[in-house]
Each structure stands twice: as structure tokens, then as C-alpha cells.
Amino acid sequence: MQIPIYLALDFPTGEEALHFLDQHELADIPVKVGMELFYREGPSIIHQLKENNHPIFLDLKLHDIPNTVKSAMRNLAGLDVDILNVHALGGAKMIEAAKDGLLQGAQKTEPKLIAVTMLTSMNEETVRSDLKQPMELAAYALHLAELSKAAGADGVVCSPLEAASIKAACGADFLTVTPGIRLAGSEQNDQHRIATPAGARRMQADYLVIGRSVTAAANPKKAYEQVIEEWKNYDNYN
Ligand SMILES: O=C(O)c1cc(=O)[nH]c(=O)n1[C@@H]1O[C@H](COP(=O)(O)O)[C@@H](O)[C@H]1O
Image (cartoon, rainbow, N blue to C red; front, side, top):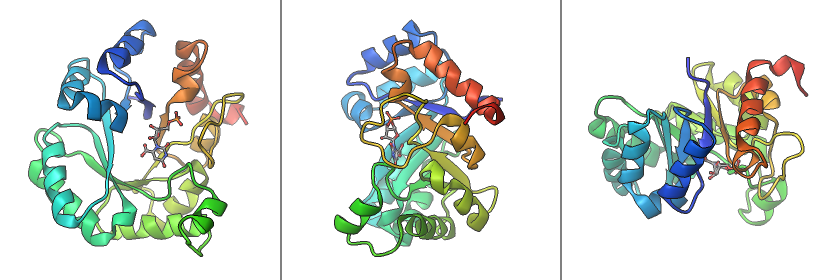
């Protein structure tokens, strides 16, 4: 079975992303294509990665009125990727519309629909001061997860710190996809609610998303292997 660790391909061009995978012998690994790469390359980067047998999470975080999201999802589902996502903050009607569009557009596989709860770059203070959200962040993320589940999402993007409580409330089958993953000693960058790969697994993350801890490492291949090692043998790590 493929290890559910998606490498975030946050590169300016497809050429750089493909070169990185090739140079560091990361053939076939699950990858996440986000706004930076997709807005530059469009569907062609998805076709190329699929040709190289990479499982793909296409992370475009749709957030618009239900009708627009439904039509966009119909198109994206036709790309035959494994995971697509929306912002849970778009509300229940928007998530339901995303699911409808996804089902209409699905080709060989039905991509999983994942809703982003609270971005891992936010903390209690920014949620309160920027969003004027009075609930505690973890409780609000849990609320958004329950809303997403009721609206037909297959899981959520959340911080590893919230994964266990979301699993407890939404059930073992409801997927927790967790960015904000950092190897010990890596830069935190703009992330706030973070954990190591081992910590995330212990906290019941189903899928990890990791970018700069690997892509900006002195030895990306070694860093990626460390992530896998921690995922497999999480009891041996802090
Ligand atoms: O949906 C996402 O993938 C996502 C949600 C979130 O809350 N936080 C978050 O960091 N991400 C994405 O996960 C990746 C994390 O990258 P690194 O911080 O470099 O590991 C980036 O591509 C983000 O766009």
C-alpha cells in the first residue's frame, strides 16, 4: 500500500517540480499540486504527473457561491485525481454543491472531497483578531469538520493537533489530512499549528501533507525518507 504522505509541489513551474522529483529519485510518490503550480501550468501538469504514476491531491481550495463551485468541481473531477478540496467556510450548501459537481464530473475514479477547516497558518490570536471568531480555534475547526461531514465531504484538512478530536466526533472513516508537518529542526516558516510526522500519526492523521521540510532540506531525499520512517515507526520518535 502507498504510504499516505503527499509532498507539496510548491514550485513556480512544472519543469522545476518534475526536475525536483527526478533529481531526488522520488518516483511514484503521492504529490500535492497547489495554486502556484496549477495556475501556471494548468491541467498539463496533472497529466504529466499521472503519466509518471503519482497519486495526486489537487489543492485549489475552492470557495465561491455554490453554483460556481459545482461547475468548477465538475471540471476538476474530470482530471481524475485522488483528492480535491474546498474551504469549509463556504458553508454547507457550497460543500454539497461541490460534491454534486464532483460526482457529475468523475471519470475513472471518484476523487475524495476534503474541506479545509482552519488554515494551519492561523493561531488563536489571528482567529480572534482577524476573523473576530469568538470560539476557541480547536472547537471551531471541529464545528467545521462536523458541518463538512453532514454536507457530504469525505474528510477535512486540519492541523495534526485537531485530528484526534475530529476523528472522535466524526468517526474513524472521516479522513483527516494534515499539513503543518515539520521534521525536528526544520524552519516553522508561516505555519503555526504544527507537529512532526510521528506526532501527527500519533494524533490520528490519516494523510500527511509536507512541503518545505523536504523541498528546502539540504538533502531532500534523506528528509523524505525520514518522514516515511517516522510514519512507519512513530512509537520510536517524539
Ligand atoms: O490545503 C492544504 O493543503 C493546506 C491547508 C492548510 O491549512 N495549511 C497548509 O499548509 N496547506 C498546504 O500544505 C502545504 C504545506 O507546505 P509546507 O508548509 O511547506 O509544509 C502548502 O502547499 C499549503 O498550501
